[in-house]
Image (tube, rainbow, N blue to C red; front, side):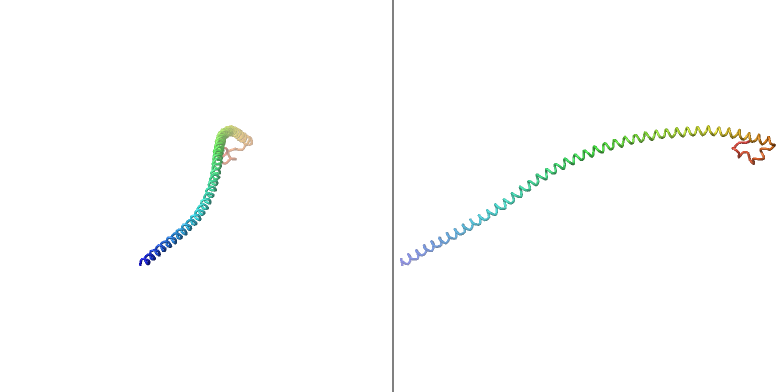
Length: 168
């Protein structure tokens, strides 16, 4: 019986040792698998990290370029704005000057026109007086000539009031 117990005890130890060995092998296999997976994940991580860093670098370069272009555009815009404002100011000054000259010319033309019209009216008034005097003299001469021939001038003119607006 002792032999048998020793034998069972030995078998138990052997089974424990075998289980321990299997557990150790399983543990080693799991460790090996974990190491392999960790290495694979590390490679993937490094690859993604490198790709992201490359993209970030490209984006930084692109941002720098766009910022430079924006700065250049802002300088050009400011320059164009200043030039436009200067041109508008010059144009406004020219328009103001021309408007002033136009107003002055208009006043001068009005003065000349009024002077000419005043002179014309004065000349017409003088001429009208001369014509009326000449008409009266001529009318009297015609009346005298008709009287010299024995013709009554009142019979030749139906209504002497129509003649030059004066009574004979």
